[in-house]
Length: 227
Image (cartoon, rainbow, N blue to C red; front, side, top):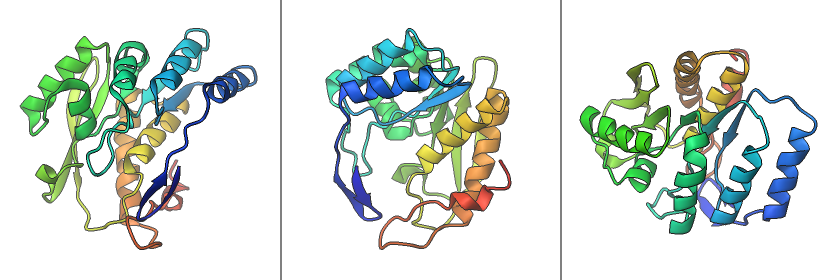
């Protein structure tokens, strides 16, 4: 992408050949304990990744389904969403959608505990084993606290965090899923990896990088000695 704190100015997907070559290069040289998938752009890339995962053992898979822009526009075409549901969701150990992405995948508007459980039921029908439904994204949740609903195979709970008055939150979803992957690779189980990742993200949001004229990035250096 070409982007800054004020917006995205261009999206330039990699070729399928490039994506496949990168996956195989990693497979042939490293032992991977956990990995993350994010913006996959189109159905061809999704199919390529799904095919590769049939023969590659990269450990635990976290999928951050980058599907919906901040203005509500879908970033994936319908064909790509169908491929994501059919080919990748069943392969995922943890899904980390925000509320618009939950709606795009399930048709359920999450507003409370009951609707979050309903959405998770639909996701489980699609093959999702575990999910963190991030609740702080839409205008409906602009109170003092932000809830994330965590649905694991053996336990369900809510992560409640104080909301901070800052516009420098660009990339929070990406950072959360990346923190979870890193902690899983260190050997933490899902519950503890998710809980610690949320704690670290809260610290990061409290220590922003005040750069640019729009929604600034997160200051990952603020937790460099805590992971």
